[in-house]
Image 1 (cartoon, rainbow over the protein chains, first blue to last red):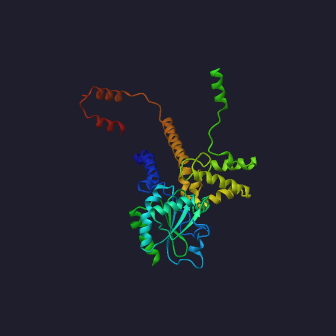
Image 2 (tube, one colour):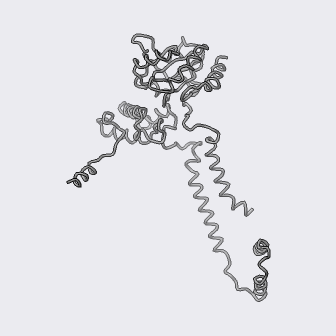
Image 3 (cartoon, rainbow over the protein chains, first blue to last red):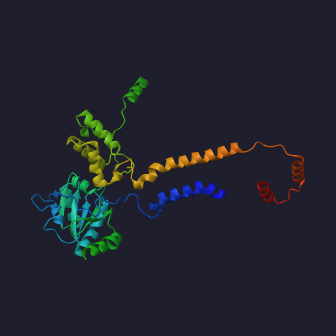
Length: 182
Length: 164
């Protein structure tokens, strides 16, 4: 009994450190923030397209009465962002498999975005131009690229921060999109 | 001459601020509120800096946003709520007192309290010990016998005996 009392401080400290270190040991990257909007409808927005007069992108595409009716990806990208360049082929691959891929051009000159897409190919069904980054702030974007999985009702179901690698596409995005389609 | 120049440069030097002149509001009271709010908001790109300190593009956008909300007549709390709605409580440098952050806020106080109690108990026990009574003849004889014993004897055994 006495010995237990002497061990108490050690036990308390181990328990405390264990509790605090648990998320790190579990392999959670502290820089990957969960989206606050998870399972909530996407914020309302209406953005112009790349070409003046051309079609833009509005939240109604995902939430309005004429909505898609199937899950979609919304990819926040910019021509000045290197990982965005790398993930374009993966987005193109997903689009080729029938996934609806939309783009949000974050704080980018439309001319630069057009050049970027001309060079790498355009995987996006439609693009909205967010020049001042306000729509991105409504989404809680804190860096590019970010990719949102939006379900058929227009709710955000997942946010991926950073490049979409083959592994992310195969192990996270595709299974999630499939489960949402069913 | 050079000394005077160096002195002047030191005196006139101002700290490098992330807040750019074109961001500053003309209303000094609003600007002061914006600065106070900014120092409590996390820059999500550089994570351990406030948006007031950070040169990141997003930090600048958020500073402008804070000022815009203040100009629109928001209270300080409304501005904070607006950002928390988008970025979560993570955007606040000082975590709010909620169930999940109780341990952050109160663990140090609780540990300090427990330490104080432990020290208190140990000290009061030490004081409660009876003063060393002089040995009687029998005890003295036993101590002498023990001291005279061969050193090769198991020390641990003695330890046990003495304690009991």
